Image (tube, rainbow, N blue to C red):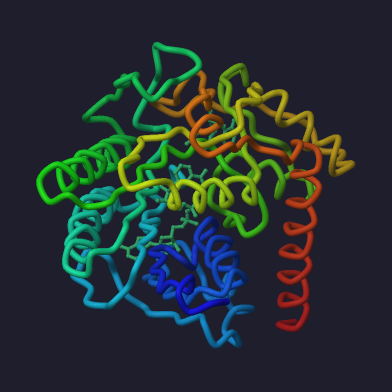
Length: 326
Ligand code: NAD
Ligand code: UDP
């Protein structure tokens, strides 16, 4: 790669699910990638295959503390994303979103770097508008169990826009809808990882409520492609921009598709619906189609097949470790 195109890129949360795929893609493009993570939900295993690349560097650091490095671009992904993880230490979740955003924006300001924020469809809360468009302001409970995440991310968006208005920073805000794929944490409680692990180990599939709530799932490779395209849009374009797959499914559909694609004999059982669980969610991606020329290309069955392959390896590795212990 010509030096002029080779950028120094910081990925916070780079050892997590999305971050590790992003680091991998940026390293493959020949950029110098600095992965920063405190390993709260991410692991070294997710990025171990990059350690031999001379253009990859790993730093253990918590983004709630200031960071002094020299970079051209920042992808700010650090934040636990699954409900059980972000609700485990809700104060830390808000701190990571808000203090983390302030620290990363401060860094971007000092070194004149372009900065990308991994925001979320959760800013729409239990949406009254369907599908969700960027112009919708949302319906979020400010005091419930999901608020640490939803309001933390909303406040981070506010900070990004204010750094743009007040300091002229080049910012990009992505509102990410449910994304799945290899390297999701096997016990993060998210629906795809839960159902996969249950289906592959013959456990009952736990559908919450009556399973009629909906989500729309995007395969990780499609999402990472959109991140990079959004980062490369002209400076005037800030977002927020919805990124996701508009293909909407009920959780009961998801359970059936996973049972079918894994050839599992697991039965479906119904459990109580968690508080404030959004009723339905589907991104309107007209803006992404227009500005990025992007839309997801991986069909659900193909994405589930690749994801199942990953979870089979996770289960095998854990069985081997168990066998070695006895
Ligand atoms: P993840 O939990 O796998 O990754 C988050 C990473 O951030 C982990 O490696 C974790 O250790 C790290 N981290 C957490 N707190 C930190 C801190 N204080 N300092 C440094 N590192 C810290 O989650 P993910 O699914 O990869 O999500 C990545 C980002 O994308 C998050 O910001 C999340 O809110 C956002 N997002 C993800 C989805 C999705 O479906 N995966 C949807 C919407 C938004
Ligand atoms: N869900 C479910 N069974 C599970 C895990 C999740 O039915 O074992 C449901 C959950 O109630 C929600 C949907 O699946 O309606 C998506 O949950 P997830 O935690 O993956 O993401 P989010 O709610 O943040 O979109």
